[in-house]
Length: 218
Ligand SMILES: [Zn+2]
Ligand SMILES: [Zn+2]
Image 1 (tube, rainbow, N blue to C red):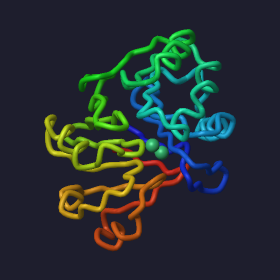
Image 2 (image 1 turned 120 degrees about the horizontal axis):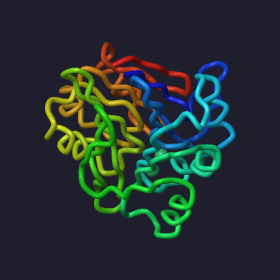
Image 3 (image 1 turned 90 degrees about the vertical axis):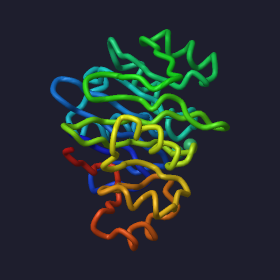
Image 4 (image 1 turned 180 degrees about the vertical axis):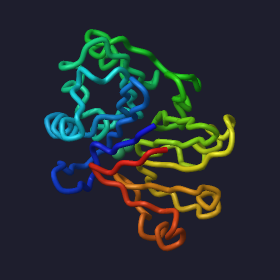
């Protein structure tokens, strides 16, 4: 399974940077996009840079309804075919209606399987409802987060019902519970993560700064 960050506040040469997050998950013949950043044209160019056209995307999962995660949504919807879109059930009714005009809309409340080896935690959090992805690669589990508003601790607790969590990639917001992070062997953080440098200092061998263009095989 190959993960590629295609939208982040930072970017490597040849990729656009912008406030927001999006990550591509490719395995076998399935292409899945998690979140869409803010700027649609920049997202499309970053995708093109890694050889992906919007019409190649089979599944889109949107973590939560914040501008920096849904900004590229219409750019994807207007250029895709036969797309399945998974959104938290708490999304605004009008946004859900717009999505359903262009794609097959799947409203998520509880944890469920999305496709082979890919699961959603279900919508978590009391205030801002957010879903995260859980990826199963052989006997390891990885989490991809958007902003982690419900708290990474709650997200890990929910995902850990499936087994031990090996690592996490995404935005970790202001999370800095080093005890919880010490259970992970891989921490790849970017976007809205407030304590990147502190986490890097504490776990130098396990930490990776992410950016548009960052890629890892799990
Ligand atoms: Zn957010
Ligand atoms: Zn965000």
